[in-house]
Image 1 (cartoon, helix red, strand yellow):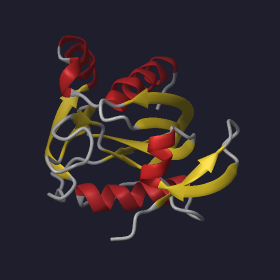
Image 2 (cartoon, one colour):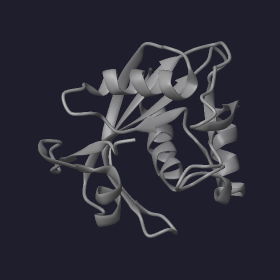
Image 3 (tube, rainbow, N blue to C red):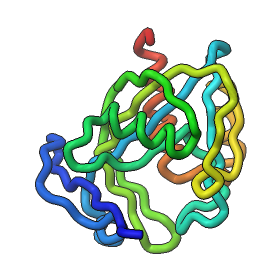
Image 4 (cartoon, helix red, strand yellow):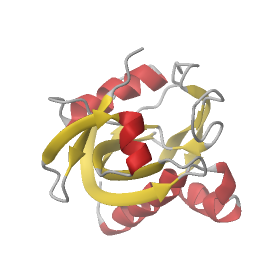
Length: 175
């Protein structure tokens, strides 16, 4: 399997190059990414548990899906593609905001991303891709916040950062 490239960007989200994903994470270079939060009619977030065979953060809980845009792909197109690849369903997505974060992993890799955060709505069960996702669950937003404080070790490094931004966005905006 050919490794995918990520889109290297500057602080203004302007493309400055392409690089293999692993190399960008080894060098901690800023690149474009996205995070999808799917909510249901009860205002619960669909969380996924990363598959046990993932090369970083296996079996940790995180947002519905996240990944990297491909060259020439819009943020919404990328989010929709990956949502279907990982969770097996389609939903209309809306971009809420973007921000930059940097999060080192225990294995020497670093996420340094300009992350486009999106939201969508879905009320059914997903058809998860077992190569990507071990398990999934719905959780109330407040329960996620409380659980991250009680058990931070069961969540991905980036999810704790992104969820905090998402939570504060929801406090300040009507969606």
